[in-house]
Amino acid sequence: MEELRGMPVVKHIAQGVSERMEKLAERGIVPTLAVIRVGEREDDLSYERGLLKRFDSVGAKVVGKVLPEDVTQEELIKVLKDCNHDDGIHGILLFRPLPKHLDEKAIVEMVDPRKDVDCMCLTNIAHTFTQSGLGHEPCTPSAVIEMMDHYGIDPTGKKVVVVGRSMVVGKPMAMMLLKKNATVTICHTKTKDLKSECKNADIIVACAGVAGMIDESYVSDGAIVFDVGINVVDGKLVGDVKYETILDSAAMATPVPGGVGTVTTSVLLKHTVSSAENML
Amino acid sequence: MEELRGMPVVKHIAQGVSERMEKLAERGIVPTLAVIRVGEREDDLSYERGLLKRFDSVGAKVVGKVLPEDVTQEELIKVLKDCNHDDGIHGILLFRPLPKHLDEKAIVEMVDPRKDVDCMCLTNIAHTFTQSGLGHEPCTPSAVIEMMDHYGIDPTGKKVVVVGRSMVVGKPMAMMLLKKNATVTICHTKTKDLKSECKNADIIVACAGVAGMIDESYVSDGAIVFDVGINVVDGKLVGDVKYETILDSAAMATPVPGGVGTVTTSVLLKHTVSSAENML
Image (cartoon, rainbow over all chains, first blue to last red; front, side, top):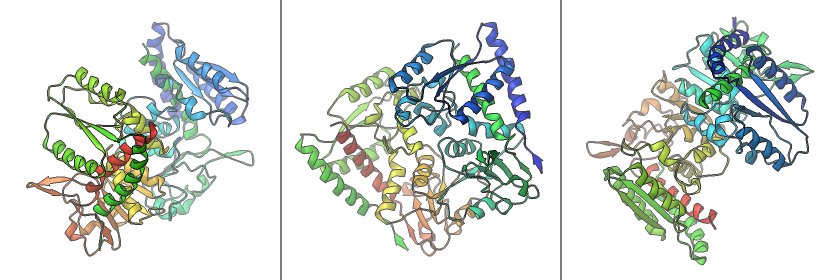
């Protein structure tokens, strides 16, 4: 089986981004992402660290805005609006979920869609649904597409099963795969025979968020498996796929860690650079 | 086979709508739809006649706005804005496609999303994608859902194959069916073995716009078939399904004409009434 690692894709994206950043630098522009975090959740902090490293490696900038757990709606919106109006900020990332006292749906709509690099607001959600080519798509399903492109996997006419129907991964993933001419099946907790659906697939995208739910009995010989799951079990990061069990059947698969998750911050970087270019 | 006719659903919707309209009438409100037509295309005119009849039958109002084929972008936008600001208008329907000299994407965004009763603008498209329960969904896939509800067809856990991936039917249909917990497969022109996909389906929704493309060889015993196709062949209205060939295999199916298409104007009526209620 061929292991589809994220790092070569990260390097490839960094290379493309660097060339574009040179052109921006000639105009004195450094692509800059504002990262807005409410509170000190460990997974937010961990993602932020990875993000900083990725942006640093190519000379792009991250501006951290940390707000207390009990921040008011008005205070948070004020920070977002300041970012919208700041010409030196090209992308805005807001960690979610927000604490329960905040109206998340209303808040994300305050972000300027042009700076909404992770597809939080309705305008970008609609562009993702229509696959208009405008706006920013969500980073995680975009990372899967980046990996497909990099490893020469063309889903045209292929049977692709997406396991999971979240707005963060499953549903946008299905739309992006449709755009790439795959025959897409979306499965979820109410699917009657998930095993046989997956067995029939040429490509499986596992994004259910259930540790190790996909094992060798779900994977046909020669199938390609993308594992989007990021689950912590006994302090260890594991995917939705029992990777070691599919080594004999799958033709290609992404490991966890070191697979799709590695690429998401590179997508965020790429989106931030696009934003900076679009604002010229 | 049970024929799933549209008319009983139309009557059922009219009944529900009439009760809601009585409450609106107490406040002096008559639900009113502005129908904006550019030019004199025969299919627009035919849809408009059906629409008028449906609204008339319950005492709802249709205001026609007819513009010449060579209307300018500015003139059309002015008409839309007038409708937006007119408190007596609760829904706006704009016939599409517009003539090529007009920027359709920009124009539909001028419609107040609250009055956009056929899901033209990005806000409603996003609500349909997220299945947020807000906004208006497109009328044709909504008509399929109305028929399912009326005839007691629960797609939970069922394998549903949607043939077609348009933004008017296929893609929103897939999202609505996901919300109803179906396992949804979206097929299209690039699907390799459409026949076997359909053969595996408990429910088929044919919305490819290709006359008679689905015949008995696509339909398993006991399957349910919704035919959304509206094609004119030799001056006759025909669906995407060769209806007469599936009578032995399918458990239920919608005819064309007299099926799904009959219900779409009722959905438009229902949306207009909802709009009027939401504006109270």
